[in-house]
Length: 222
Image (cartoon, rainbow, N blue to C red; front, side):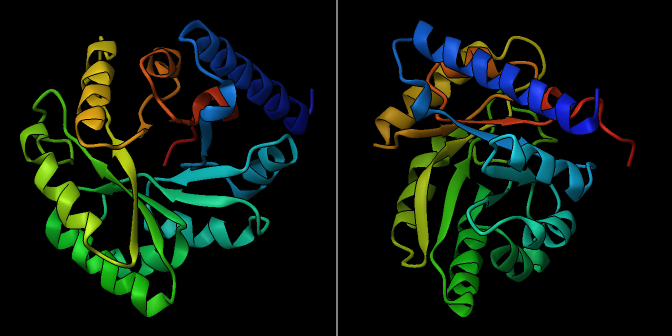
């Protein structure tokens, strides 16, 4: 099997599993966006996934986004899904169409200014830290409402919804928590679920899932 055939088969499998999970939860598969995560994989792999039907791609690091996103076709959307340092905000705003990791008012305001400088409106998600993990980025659930209101007031940011990376283990309860939080804040978009738990995420209401190794195979060492 060629690399192209392998990626196409894996992508079809993931899309099939997303569709089945959506149907199980009484939702349309068309309402779930698959973001193919290219962390450590070469641009050539992302282009093979594009040829097989993927249209959204994610990178954890600004440098990788800068290297790969410009090489994608114009109708492909680049999502930055890793923690964003303040000194890389301008670069991130230029490289990505979507920033999924807004976790503070200060970061949101920097992104707003950077988006204005780029002459673009930047789609963003507010990242929520569930499970109290100190090593993870994200706003605490109790502080999410204030941050959401702040982001809504920034003219160059288009707030789409909430994003989370739950603690390892049983992630479904955390997905349910994020769904309820999104509902309370009037946000319908939820970015949650990765290669090992995206089906549970879809069943709990995910509208965006971020999948890397299930599409591209074993992740390359950095």
